[in-house]
Length: 443
Image (tube, rainbow, N blue to C red):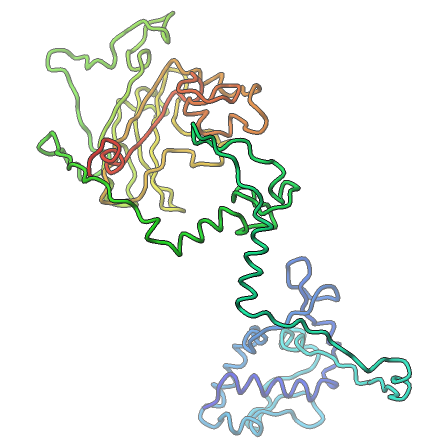
């Protein structure tokens, strides 16, 4: 049976043996890498393929035609006799019949990847006169090899070097157990002379070469001292309700109504700080907080978790909704609260300036975990003025800080529990496991 490899080897041999009669300059078809792309020319590094089939990528159909035409008459062992060049010509013969031509016209269409692999060699050599070389060159070479250290000498040297390079430890306040002033010139990364103390100050040249790294590495050799100490057994939480209402899919509705009145409380006209000039519906003037327990059973479904009206419709929008969606690129789940305040669509999504976190509240993918969702709309937040962060320090631009849009950073960059700035809408979550652990129960 005739194989591709045998045909490729034979054609390569014919190209080499008959190169002078091909009528082509090898540099005209040389493939080179120039500015990140493969092209033909004199600039760049030559392209050399690791595999023969890659060098014949443009001729694989032609090679397969040879194998098919040969049929059962050709084998790897007799390839030299069935595939050859007619003497004095550039014609390829197969089983005595003309099959193709290696003239320059065909070369430009075929074989270029292969021919571009050929390298020229300088056939001239330079002869040196040994007598003259001995007069100029010193042939007596002596190499001083350092005597290798024993293992004990290596250990002794390590501890000697460590004692010299570790520096002085920081002082500790006996009353507060706080670390006192630390010599700013200690770390070699701060123009000091000693091993950097913390990983955060390792610099470019001392990655994994800090005292903190050494401490963490030594923990591996003393596992018994760093094992978690036995903690008292925590009580098991007992659910207060008998069960829960299960929805088989998103976008299913719960109708909340007042059996005595048409008003369910959300549309009651009120006058508040946010609606001081004109009364408005209570959900916009007082704001609202809606909570719910949710367990997501897949990582593909998206839809509405709850809604009142439709704040995103193009015609007469009103109300609010909490929705969940999946990023199809990362298969991550997110939550977003949207509220139509009468003139503007308010959302819990961060502006595009925030690059350190996802723009929406992310829900970990865990099909067995319950999550407590808290969706809040606060009309007293001055969201429209939050885009002006001229008072923020340049080292921590407020608009790039997700905590600023959560309402935890003032316009001057200082942290607070409530800044009255950021997004009017906010979505927060906590898993049942974390909540029970925080309350002192088994998780």
